[in-house]
Every structure is written in structure tokens, then in C-alpha cells.
Image 1 (cartoon, rainbow, N blue to C red):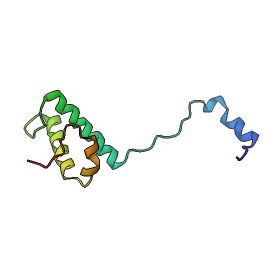
Image 2 (cartoon, rainbow, N blue to C red; image 1 turned 90 degrees about the vertical axis):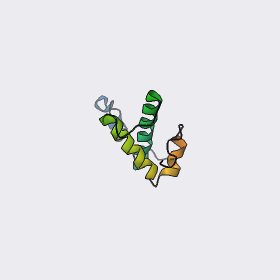
Image 3 (tube, one colour; image 1 turned 135 degrees about the vertical axis):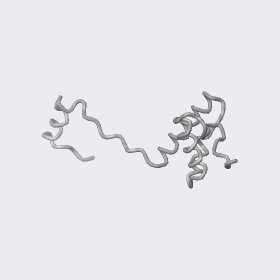
Image 4 (spheres, rainbow, N blue to C red; image 1 turned 180 degrees about the vertical axis):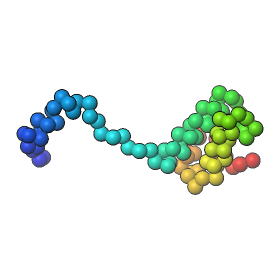
Length: 91
């Protein structure tokens, strides 16, 4: 194992750096799709039905997102998150 130079170790122990943290990784397209699916699932659990285009703006946006997810090439990988089976074929 490589030894760090003493000067470098002193820099890392500086109190000014106590709150410095590495950047968290940026979400991938798949992560965003999985998050959107979870948002739709929460909405369905609250309202007892799938979002429709005839609803308020939020419902319309969720309906459009669900439609897009159903047509997505990520469909197979998203099924693991789909506890309500919302990603079935469009009706």
C-alpha cells in the first residue's frame, strides 16, 4: 500500500475541509425513468386508478409519462420496479 506524504495528509486534516464531500453521481436516464415510474405508482396508490389525460395538469403529465414508459426501450429493465403492473401493454 502506498504511503501518502505527510504534507498531503495535513491538508486533508485541515478543519476547513471538514465539510467537503465528493459529488454524488448524476442520475442516469434509467434512474430518471425508474423515479418517474415510482411517482406514477404513488399517484395510482393514492387515487386508486391510472392517471388520465382528462385530469388536472399533474395527472395529465403523469399519464403522458406512463404512456412514454410503456413505449420505452427500457421497459424490460423497469418491470422490476413496477409493483402495480402498470407497464403492461397500452389499452
